[in-house]
Amino acid sequence: MEFQTLKIKIENQISYITIANPPVNALSVQTLRELEKAIDSAVEDSEVKVIVLTGEGKFFIAGANIKELSDIETSQKGREYSQYGQFVFNKIEQSPKPVIAMINGACLGGGLEIAMATHIRIAAESAKLGLPELNLGLIPGFGGTQRFALLTGREKAIEMILSSDAITGKEASRIGLVSKSVPLEDLEATVRSMAEKISAKSSVSICAALTAINRGVSYGQEQGYLVEAELFGNLFTSEDAKEGIHAFIQKRSPVFKNC
Image (cartoon, rainbow, N blue to C red; front, side, top):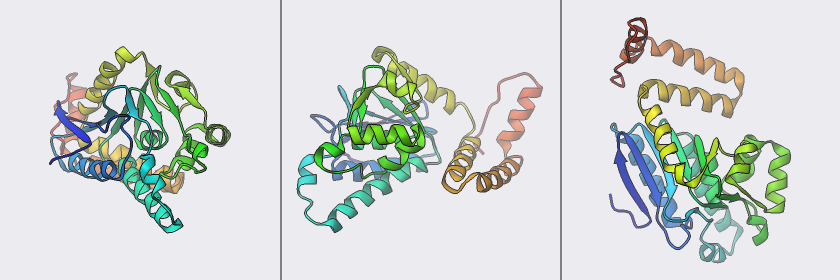
């Protein structure tokens, strides 16, 4: 599959999706479309167990394509633009395979919105994260108003969105916006280690865990408990659960077949 604004590399069951849209890796409509295809492809690829999303060069994603925004002249077009971005980012959030954001540099506007849709966010301490849309007379339109509040709480979301201030990766880690922050020179190794640790697990249990977590977040704890119990029970019929339990009893490492 040919992409104009993405680079794809698969290594050790990990699909690395890199936004390569210079000069600042802006989220154009073309990039969104390619990203949708890349996520679908990684999910369908039986050899891929973990997806890593990052940006090329000094930027993660520095926001939307401002020229494209300036061409939107009706509320209908603006609504369709927002809904498409939400659709793509929801695909990431609901992916049955974990998506890790490797935030290497400026992560602003749509860039932060896509990062918030991933399952794990690891940022360089020096990275800049923020939602500056109000500086343009707009608001975050790809789910940012909702996910920011879920991750950090309503008060911090209001402060960050209304002020349009950016914070460092280190501060983002402190407030729970990212999972952790590390020095830039350690970022790639840290993300690779996390991805490889996850990819050593059974893809069946990985998918079940993500499904249970997402269901509870989307529909409430009561629904989440029901789904958790159902999936927990179903896993006992899988070959990997049998292997995992027997390996533990035998004091050896499990050899999962992802079934």
